[in-house]
Length: 340
Image (cartoon, rainbow, N blue to C red; front, side, top):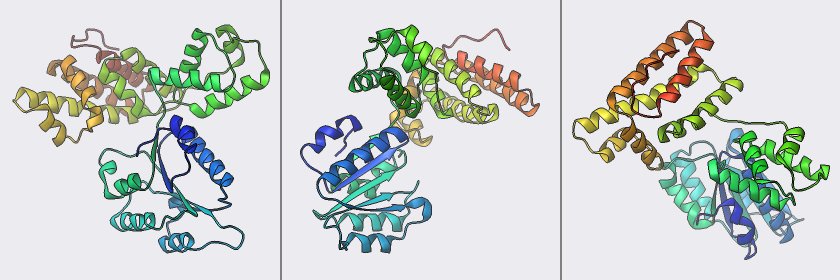
């Protein structure tokens, strides 16, 4: 059963499931889901909590021993288990064995990293889905982020004008932890409401945060303004231009191979399978291929080669100018006439 974080509180009104799996790369939403589950469990007599972390090595025998015993001071216990980035065959089998140990006085709270489509098809993930709710936590983006932010403000008793909400979404995109802290500060300041854009800009310091992988999806969609904004923010956060060149090269190479394959009569689904393009990204890739002919992709690849030369020559400004031009080039199929 898939359960999204915003629905967790409503779900818990009907009682606790024996097991929850929270996975993803958004630290705030993951921590809040865990805190809510712990609080609910404590209210139902789960007074003992044991924690096992993959970063410190997983002793499965110790976990099994804990799941089968109760202390003198508690009749109900929580076992928290942080899974590693990848589960080998042995870990997958032991996890599935552990799930069979569930009983009314044991609550399993299992957390893990962001999972790709292949991992979500694994036997261990299926077993977790059957044992209880699986809760994906990801940073909301675009319109989803604006809606999430509006709900968050309302939950904290804050009324904010529409343009103020849009500015906050821009100022804190990709950094929910910082945003949560600023909302708490605004509540404590007891400012006159509704909060205006001018007041927010006076009181709040922007804290954008992106990772390099967030750059590519907007470019594939042709949303170059957003892509360029993310690129500039990545530079301000100290991301290395050479890293972006490497990641962009991988994306462009895949697009080139697909465009060549389509020209040779291969099907999109066949090419996507050969190049291991996740199903969740295939619509984005298809959009880029419809917009960018082979000649344009080859030009972008040549521009990327120039960016690589600038990186190798330690000309950081030149490299970033090329990267910016490449982002703009994802707009349409027209050949670019102006180079940095």
